[in-house]
Length: 351
Image 1 (cartoon, one colour):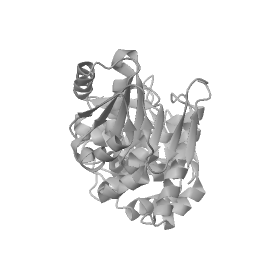
Image 2 (cartoon, helix red, strand yellow; image 1 turned 90 degrees about the horizontal axis):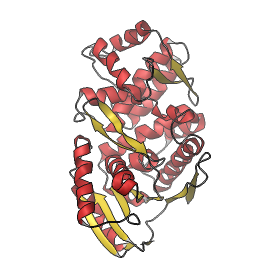
Image 3 (tube, helix red, strand yellow; image 1 turned 120 degrees about the vertical axis):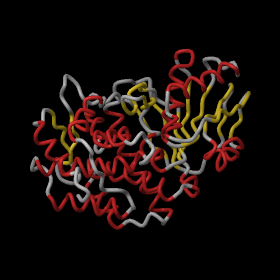
Image 4 (cartoon, one colour; image 1 turned 90 degrees about the vertical axis):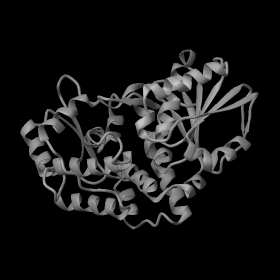
C-alpha cells in the first residue's frame, strides 16, 4: 500500500510512503547506508541485498539518543567526504528515529543538500518519525533544537522489521500512535482500546492509519506553522522529562506517554477534558506497558524548561491539549499558576 506526500505549499516536493515488504531499490549513483550496530546486526544484509548502486558504503554510528549530536553528524559528514560523494549521491537511513533524524540532517548539510531515503525499523519511526521531513539533533539546551525541515525522496516501511524489535521499543512506538488518535480520530482511539497488535494484519492497519493521519497533517503544514504543531501533544512535557533525565532513563515514546498524562491533567484543569477521558487515555497507555508517572523535583525549573521548547515564542508557552478524545486545541498564555499547580501534582510520588 502507498500513502502519498504532496506538500500543498511546495508543488515540487512529493514522494511516496510504501508500506510493504522492502522492494528492490535502484540507484545510478553512490549510496551510503547510515545505521547503528544493533540495527545492522538484524537488517543491514537484507537492505544491502535489495540495493543496486554504482558504489555502496555503510556508515555505522553508536546506538542511542545520547549520540544524537552535532559531533555524530560531523563524523558522518567526514566519512561522506572520504567516500567522495557528490550532489547526486544518496543517503539511506536504516534505523529508528535517531538514525532517521541524523541522516536527514546530514543529507541537508552535505554540499548544501543531497537526497536521502528512509527505511525505518522501529514502530515509532514507521508511524511517525520517518514521515514529514523533520531532521535534527539534540544539545544541552534541549531536544531537536538544531535541525532542518528536509524531506526524503521516499519512505519504505516494512512491518516485518518489527519482529526483531524489543517489547519496550515497540511500546514506545505505540505512544505516538495513541497521540495521533487522541488528537485527530476518536474511532481510531476506540479501535486501539481493543486492538490486538500481535495480529499482523491489525498491526499493518495501525501503521497505515497512523501514516495517513501524519501525511494529512504534513501535506497541509510542512513547517509547523499551524496544524502540524498538534502532533507535539505530549512532547512539550516529554522533552523536559528527557532533558532532565539526560536522555538515558526513558525512550522518546515513553517520555511522550508521561507528557500526555501531564497535558491531560492541564486540560482537565482548564475544563476542556474530563477526568473520565483522562482515565481512558491512562488505561490505554498502561495497556501497552507505557509509563504514566513521573516525579518532578522542582516545579519552577521544570516550568522554565518550557521556554526552550521550539513551540514557545515571545516568552509565551504553547500547549497542545486534547479537547475531548479525537479533537485538539492549542492554548497560549495559560496562567503560570494554573500550569504550576498541575506540575505540583507530579511532585508527589503517587499521581
